[in-house]
Amino acid sequence: MSIARSRITAQGQISIPAKIRQKLGVGPGSVLIWDEEKGRILVRQEGTYSSADIHAALFPGAPPKHRSLKELKDGVRKHIRKSHERS
Image 1 (cartoon, rainbow, N blue to C red):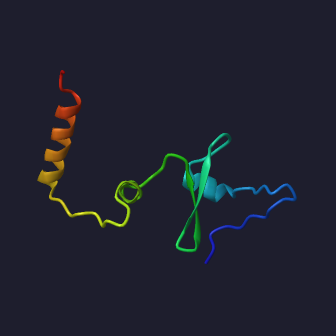
Image 2 (cartoon, rainbow, N blue to C red):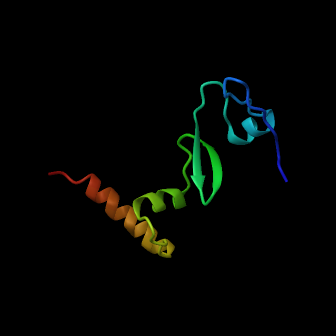
């Protein structure tokens, strides 16, 4: 079931229905990204990537490993310490 419809103009432009603009949090000057994934077209606001998107870009084909909260916090601490080390 669709949540909204748009019509393409002769110039190839579309209007984004108000309901969709509100859901995406976009307005004049916002940039939308159009992607194709598994035969579907995805539209999202530029700069809005999920952690799964980032993981897929960094480690293509590798499923994310499950980590405990302690392991995640330790990893963040190590990264911060390393990035703030004095040479």
